[in-house]
Each structure stands twice: as C-alpha cells, then as structure tokens.
Image 1 (cartoon, helix red, strand yellow):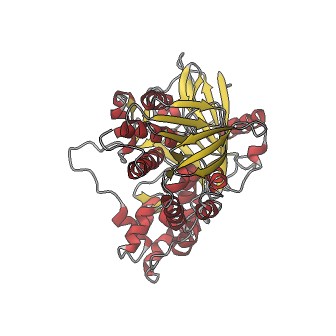
Image 2 (cartoon, one colour):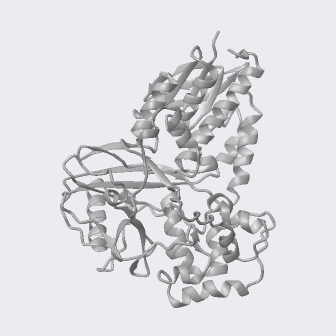
Image 3 (cartoon, helix red, strand yellow):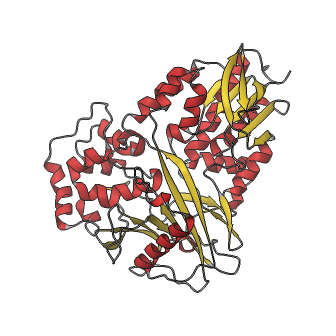
Length: 483
C-alpha cells in the first residue's frame, strides 16, 4: 500500500515539503496537507489592491540563495521572477532621513566614514575608537547583537542602523537577538580571527563585482505576487488539502502516527505513516509534548513578535519620495524617532513599492505603498483597531514624505505571533530540537523558527523535512527503493 504522509501547516515550508514529498515518493503516495486557517501560504499573502496582486506578507526573497530560484525553475515560473529597480533605501534616524549607507553588514560598518551621515560626531568617533579596544574573543559562544555592538562601536550604530534593519527582518530587539543566528557572517569572521568589529565587517563584505560586469540582483519577487508560487506548488504537490482543520493531537501508533484534527467536541482522526510539522513554535511545542518532550521543551523557549502591514493605493499622480535626487525604495524608522508634533511614529518602515518594483502599480496606475507596524515587546500600537492603525500610519507617511493624498483603496493585514525571535543561543536550541526529533522515525520539523525567517530558508527546511521522512519510510519498508 502506498505511504500516507501528513504535512501540518500550509505556509511556504509546508507547501515546499508537500511538493518535495511528491517528487520523492511518486504519484501513488497520499499526501495530506492540513492547515488550520482557510488560506494557504502562511506569511506569504498576495491581496488584491487597486486591481493588482500586492504582497502584504513577505515582500521579496534573497536571490543570492538558490532555493526559491531553483523551485521556480522546477515549477516553470522562472519567467515570473522580477528584481528591484535602482531605487535606494533610506533610514530616518537622529531626526533626519539619509540613504542607508553601503559598506556595512546588516548596518554594522567597516569604517566610520561610510556611516558618518547617519551618526552624530560622537557616534562616528565611537566607531573610530573601536580599533583601540582589546581584541574580541567569543570562544565559540554566542552574544547579544546589541550587547556586543554597543560595547564595541556605541549605541548609535545599534539604534540608528542595526536595529532598523533587524527590525525589518525579525520585528526584534537587537539587545535580545543572538549574533550567530541573525548576523552569521559577522560571527564567522570573528571566529576566523578578526579581532575587531571593523575587521570582521571588512572580511565579511562580498567582493566587489569585476569590472564591466553587472552585479547580480540581491532580491527577487514574483510579478503576480507570491500567490503565483503558492498556486504552482499546490498544483505540483497534488495533495489532499484540508483547510480550517486545526491539529489538536499527535500520537505514536506502532510504526505510524495518529493525528487528532478538527473541532474539540467531535474530533476526527487521521492515520499516517509519517508527519511533517511545518507550523509555528508554540503549535509544534503542543503537538510534540507527548511524542518528543525534549523537543517540545526547547520549542517553548522560542519567543514570537507580532506585526501588521498597511497597504495603500494612492492616486496615480502621487509623487513618491526621492532623496538626493534618487528615487527612494523605502524608509526604515529607528526606534524612538518622533514626528514633527512630538508624537512617536507608529510605523517602523515604509516601502514605496511603485518606486522599488517597476511592475507594481494599480490597474489604473495607482501608486502602491506599504507600511509596517510592530516591534517585539511593543504591543500597544497593534491593539488599535484597523481604522485607527490606518489613520496613524497615514499620519506617519505624511510627516516623513509630505504625502497626504487620500488612498483610493487600503487594507490592513495582521500577523499575530508571526515572527520568531532568534535569541542568544538560538543555533544550539535548534540543534537540540532537531536532534530530538531525528531520533523519532517518521517525523520531521520545518518552518521559520529554525534556520531563518526568509522565504529561501523556509523552503530549505520544508524540503529537508520531506527528505528526512522519505528516508525513514525507506528504512521501515513503507517505501520501496525505485518505487
């Protein structure tokens, strides 16, 4: 009898797992994809705004990693991939808007001159003085990003550069995030012998492109939004998709598994030969409490941040921001920045999407902008209703850019507990989780809580989980070699 595999979670990690299972197990295998909401894609969400598909979850993927590009090629979607235009990112820090400086690794500079425009004189002096400090010796240990950098190069580098960038990725607090998981290139350079932050950044920076060559794009997206990728994955996976069904329990039954799904008063049960859990850490912790208590306990240490994204479709003649004569792709807002009236900014960042991506306009030429709200530990703004949140984000946009045009259309999308926090020691924590899960045949785990919150990293975990359970099925005789 062909094997049955249950994939719990319909985000990009779960969909990637289902697709890879289909390619590895063949057409006869039964793949059941369980998603507790009524929508697939997880934090990849394309909405209709002013008649066009607009991503209000993850916006882009890192094109220097191979996973999404390879997946697009497999699915015949490579022609749908687009790259940003030449607009440059800006940052609002110290009461001013400046171009986000180059020559940094996640905002950490190799030299003071490259970031002098964003820092005060005292802040730049702190960067220069770092060369005279004793050599850094991590000894293989992890460190707080904020703790290490504040000690070495001063508060302003963290507050005005590093945290706005990390906030865009993790909605996190630099003082709580771990160096090895969030800025691995810097940690690797320090492990390799760099004695200072500046030396580590210089060795971690990518080599400049050869003369007369075009640099490869850093980011990519899908012309029709991420729904293009999701739809193609779903079709290729040929899975039995069951939406609106939470998984309430997971138990071992001999060589297989039993999943309790659906409403608590009248649950259904699903028998499976193997299970992939591609769900947030709290949900995985609950399901693993009985079958893998060691993994469950460690998953409980993963904290989460919530956020919201506000999408605005502005009239076609609305001018989007420029800085120093160049179109701006967006503005990061440092923690603690205030509007002209002294009110704290609600948004942590804006993306001027129609500047950043040449194809992104409404059906009638509307200009698209998205604002992001939410940092770890700061929940007050997210407790406001959609109308109030929209009002505050529009006020932020007006203060930053002068844009006061009434939106043609708008949407607010919330991501409760959507972003796992990679704290100090995160890599060790994940190693413990994966080690415990690997000891149980027919079970694998995937998702953003493990090896990166970006789309390529999540795809990689889903595909790896699929390969793991395929191997287990071969070992237990549930799958024949050659199929």
